[in-house]
Image (cartoon, rainbow, N blue to C red; front, side, top):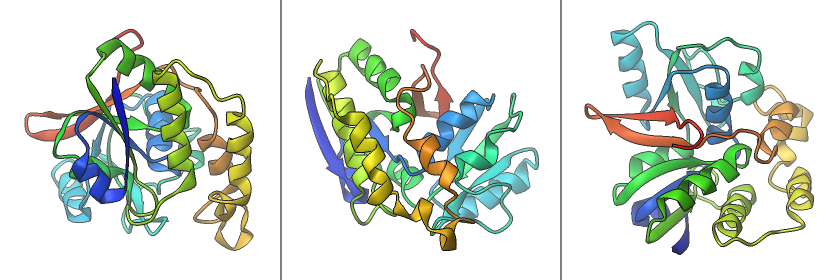
Length: 232
Protein backbone atom coordinates (compact mmCIF):
# COMPACT_ATOMS: atom_id res chain seq x y z
CA UNK A 1 0.00 0.00 0.00
CA UNK A 2 1.46 3.32 -1.13
CA UNK A 3 0.39 5.95 1.43
CA UNK A 4 0.93 9.55 0.37
CA UNK A 5 0.31 12.78 2.27
CA UNK A 6 -0.92 15.91 0.49
CA UNK A 7 -1.89 19.35 1.72
CA UNK A 8 -4.45 22.05 0.99
CA UNK A 9 -6.62 22.62 -2.09
CA UNK A 10 -3.81 21.78 -4.49
CA UNK A 11 -3.16 18.56 -2.60
CA UNK A 12 -6.82 17.59 -2.93
CA UNK A 13 -6.57 18.13 -6.68
CA UNK A 14 -3.50 15.89 -6.85
CA UNK A 15 -4.83 13.08 -4.66
CA UNK A 16 -5.39 9.71 -6.29
CA UNK A 17 -6.62 6.30 -5.25
CA UNK A 18 -8.56 5.97 -2.01
CA UNK A 19 -8.47 9.51 -0.64
CA UNK A 20 -9.04 10.74 2.91
CA UNK A 21 -9.89 14.44 3.18
CA UNK A 22 -8.79 15.48 6.68
CA UNK A 23 -10.24 18.43 8.61
CA UNK A 24 -9.86 18.01 12.38
CA UNK A 25 -10.80 21.56 13.45
CA UNK A 26 -13.71 21.15 12.79
CA UNK A 27 -15.57 19.99 9.69
CA UNK A 28 -15.12 16.25 9.75
CA UNK A 29 -15.02 15.90 13.50
CA UNK A 30 -18.40 17.64 13.42
CA UNK A 31 -19.77 15.30 10.74
CA UNK A 32 -18.96 12.26 12.89
CA UNK A 33 -20.86 13.83 15.79
CA UNK A 34 -23.78 14.62 13.47
CA UNK A 35 -24.02 11.00 12.38
CA UNK A 36 -23.73 9.88 16.00
CA UNK A 37 -26.72 12.11 16.77
CA UNK A 38 -28.73 10.27 14.12
CA UNK A 39 -28.21 12.28 10.91
CA UNK A 40 -29.27 10.26 7.87
CA UNK A 41 -27.07 11.97 5.27
CA UNK A 42 -24.84 15.00 4.80
CA UNK A 43 -24.48 16.90 1.53
CA UNK A 44 -21.00 18.51 1.45
CA UNK A 45 -20.98 21.58 -0.79
CA UNK A 46 -18.30 24.13 -1.55
CA UNK A 47 -20.52 27.00 -2.67
CA UNK A 48 -22.85 28.91 -0.37
CA UNK A 49 -25.29 29.61 -3.18
CA UNK A 50 -25.71 25.87 -3.71
CA UNK A 51 -26.50 25.43 0.00
CA UNK A 52 -29.16 28.17 -0.11
CA UNK A 53 -30.66 26.74 -3.30
CA UNK A 54 -30.89 23.26 -1.80
CA UNK A 55 -32.72 24.61 1.24
CA UNK A 56 -35.11 26.60 -0.94
CA UNK A 57 -35.94 23.42 -2.82
CA UNK A 58 -36.30 21.39 0.40
CA UNK A 59 -37.03 23.47 3.55
CA UNK A 60 -36.57 20.37 5.72
CA UNK A 61 -32.81 20.40 5.12
CA UNK A 62 -30.62 21.70 7.92
CA UNK A 63 -27.89 24.16 6.92
CA UNK A 64 -24.63 23.83 8.86
CA UNK A 65 -21.35 25.54 8.10
CA UNK A 66 -19.01 28.48 8.30
CA UNK A 67 -16.89 31.03 6.53
CA UNK A 68 -13.93 32.39 8.44
CA UNK A 69 -15.04 30.19 11.32
CA UNK A 70 -18.32 32.08 11.70
CA UNK A 71 -21.77 30.61 11.06
CA UNK A 72 -23.05 31.52 7.61
CA UNK A 73 -25.96 33.91 7.39
CA UNK A 74 -29.31 32.14 7.47
CA UNK A 75 -27.81 28.82 8.60
CA UNK A 76 -29.14 26.73 11.46
CA UNK A 77 -25.75 26.02 13.02
CA UNK A 78 -22.12 26.90 12.59
CA UNK A 79 -19.29 24.41 12.20
CA UNK A 80 -19.31 23.58 15.91
CA UNK A 81 -19.54 20.09 17.47
CA UNK A 82 -20.54 21.48 20.85
CA UNK A 83 -23.49 23.34 19.32
CA UNK A 84 -25.12 20.09 18.17
CA UNK A 85 -24.18 17.69 20.96
CA UNK A 86 -27.64 17.62 22.55
CA UNK A 87 -29.69 17.53 19.37
CA UNK A 88 -31.88 14.69 18.16
CA UNK A 89 -30.98 14.50 14.47
CA UNK A 90 -32.60 11.13 13.79
CA UNK A 91 -33.28 10.87 10.08
CA UNK A 92 -32.29 14.46 9.34
CA UNK A 93 -30.57 15.45 6.12
CA UNK A 94 -27.94 18.16 6.35
CA UNK A 95 -26.17 20.50 3.94
CA UNK A 96 -22.64 21.21 5.16
CA UNK A 97 -20.26 23.84 3.78
CA UNK A 98 -16.92 24.96 5.19
CA UNK A 99 -13.79 26.87 4.27
CA UNK A 100 -11.56 23.79 4.14
CA UNK A 101 -13.03 20.31 4.50
CA UNK A 102 -15.91 20.45 2.04
CA UNK A 103 -13.69 22.38 -0.38
CA UNK A 104 -11.31 19.42 -0.31
CA UNK A 105 -14.06 16.98 -1.27
CA UNK A 106 -15.11 19.26 -4.13
CA UNK A 107 -11.54 19.42 -5.45
CA UNK A 108 -10.62 15.73 -5.10
CA UNK A 109 -11.50 15.14 -8.74
CA UNK A 110 -8.92 12.40 -9.34
CA UNK A 111 -9.82 10.30 -6.28
CA UNK A 112 -11.28 6.86 -6.85
CA UNK A 113 -13.03 6.88 -3.48
CA UNK A 114 -13.33 9.56 -0.79
CA UNK A 115 -13.51 9.28 2.99
CA UNK A 116 -13.56 12.10 5.52
CA UNK A 117 -10.82 12.18 8.14
CA UNK A 118 -10.59 13.27 11.78
CA UNK A 119 -9.30 11.89 15.06
CA UNK A 120 -12.72 10.97 16.41
CA UNK A 121 -13.07 8.11 13.91
CA UNK A 122 -9.48 7.68 12.70
CA UNK A 123 -9.16 3.99 13.58
CA UNK A 124 -12.48 3.14 11.93
CA UNK A 125 -11.28 4.99 8.84
CA UNK A 126 -7.99 3.06 8.83
CA UNK A 127 -9.83 -0.23 9.36
CA UNK A 128 -12.01 0.47 6.32
CA UNK A 129 -8.96 1.25 4.20
CA UNK A 130 -7.16 -1.90 5.36
CA UNK A 131 -10.20 -3.97 4.44
CA UNK A 132 -10.35 -2.39 0.98
CA UNK A 133 -6.57 -2.79 0.57
CA UNK A 134 -6.14 -0.21 -2.22
CA UNK A 135 -2.86 0.17 -4.05
CA UNK A 136 -2.73 3.93 -3.40
CA UNK A 137 -3.96 5.94 -0.42
CA UNK A 138 -3.91 9.74 -0.40
CA UNK A 139 -4.19 11.53 2.95
CA UNK A 140 -5.07 15.17 2.29
CA UNK A 141 -4.57 17.70 5.10
CA UNK A 142 -6.89 20.59 4.31
CA UNK A 143 -5.30 23.05 6.73
CA UNK A 144 -6.64 26.54 7.32
CA UNK A 145 -9.16 27.46 4.62
CA UNK A 146 -7.28 25.12 2.33
CA UNK A 147 -4.49 27.67 1.91
CA UNK A 148 -2.07 27.24 4.84
CA UNK A 149 -1.05 24.12 6.73
CA UNK A 150 -2.55 23.11 10.06
CA UNK A 151 -0.68 21.06 12.63
CA UNK A 152 -3.74 19.10 13.72
CA UNK A 153 -4.47 17.82 10.20
CA UNK A 154 -0.86 16.78 9.63
CA UNK A 155 -0.89 14.99 12.98
CA UNK A 156 -4.09 13.16 12.01
CA UNK A 157 -2.60 12.11 8.68
CA UNK A 158 0.45 10.73 10.43
CA UNK A 159 -1.73 8.88 12.95
CA UNK A 160 -3.78 7.26 10.18
CA UNK A 161 -0.58 6.39 8.33
CA UNK A 162 0.83 4.61 11.39
CA UNK A 163 -2.40 2.62 11.73
CA UNK A 164 -2.23 1.60 8.06
CA UNK A 165 1.40 0.55 8.43
CA UNK A 166 0.74 -1.43 11.61
CA UNK A 167 2.90 0.93 13.62
CA UNK A 168 2.15 2.95 16.75
CA UNK A 169 2.91 6.34 18.22
CA UNK A 170 3.24 6.13 22.01
CA UNK A 171 3.17 9.94 22.25
CA UNK A 172 0.01 10.56 20.23
CA UNK A 173 -2.12 11.64 23.21
CA UNK A 174 0.58 14.01 24.43
CA UNK A 175 0.80 15.50 20.94
CA UNK A 176 -2.95 15.99 20.86
CA UNK A 177 -2.93 17.80 24.20
CA UNK A 178 -0.03 19.97 23.02
CA UNK A 179 -2.28 21.38 20.29
CA UNK A 180 -3.85 23.45 23.06
CA UNK A 181 -0.83 25.76 22.92
CA UNK A 182 -0.37 25.79 19.15
CA UNK A 183 -3.01 25.14 16.47
CA UNK A 184 -5.82 24.96 19.05
CA UNK A 185 -4.93 28.15 20.87
CA UNK A 186 -7.91 30.01 19.38
CA UNK A 187 -10.29 27.77 21.35
CA UNK A 188 -8.85 29.16 24.59
CA UNK A 189 -8.97 32.83 23.59
CA UNK A 190 -12.00 34.32 25.37
CA UNK A 191 -12.22 36.99 22.67
CA UNK A 192 -13.03 34.26 20.12
CA UNK A 193 -15.13 31.99 22.33
CA UNK A 194 -18.37 32.73 20.49
CA UNK A 195 -16.88 31.40 17.24
CA UNK A 196 -14.40 28.89 18.65
CA UNK A 197 -15.78 27.53 21.96
CA UNK A 198 -13.31 25.67 24.14
CA UNK A 199 -15.50 22.58 24.21
CA UNK A 200 -15.00 22.17 20.46
CA UNK A 201 -11.29 21.64 21.03
CA UNK A 202 -11.81 18.80 23.49
CA UNK A 203 -14.47 17.19 21.29
CA UNK A 204 -12.20 17.31 18.23
CA UNK A 205 -9.13 15.76 19.87
CA UNK A 206 -10.96 12.71 21.22
CA UNK A 207 -9.24 9.77 19.58
CA UNK A 208 -11.14 6.81 18.06
CA UNK A 209 -14.42 7.75 19.71
CA UNK A 210 -16.64 6.38 16.93
CA UNK A 211 -16.51 2.99 15.22
CA UNK A 212 -17.68 4.14 11.79
CA UNK A 213 -15.99 5.68 8.77
CA UNK A 214 -17.69 8.33 6.60
CA UNK A 215 -17.83 7.69 2.86
CA UNK A 216 -18.44 10.47 0.35
CA UNK A 217 -19.83 9.52 -3.05
CA UNK A 218 -22.10 10.68 -5.85
CA UNK A 219 -25.71 9.50 -5.74
CA UNK A 220 -27.82 10.50 -8.74
CA UNK A 221 -25.26 13.17 -9.51
CA UNK A 222 -25.30 14.67 -6.01
CA UNK A 223 -22.39 14.33 -3.57
CA UNK A 224 -23.51 12.68 -0.30
CA UNK A 225 -21.60 11.71 2.84
CA UNK A 226 -22.89 8.69 4.74
CA UNK A 227 -21.92 6.83 7.86
CA UNK A 228 -20.61 3.36 7.10
CA UNK A 229 -21.79 0.65 9.44
CA UNK A 230 -19.03 -1.24 11.21
CA UNK A 231 -17.80 -4.17 9.17
CA UNK A 232 -18.90 -2.71 5.80
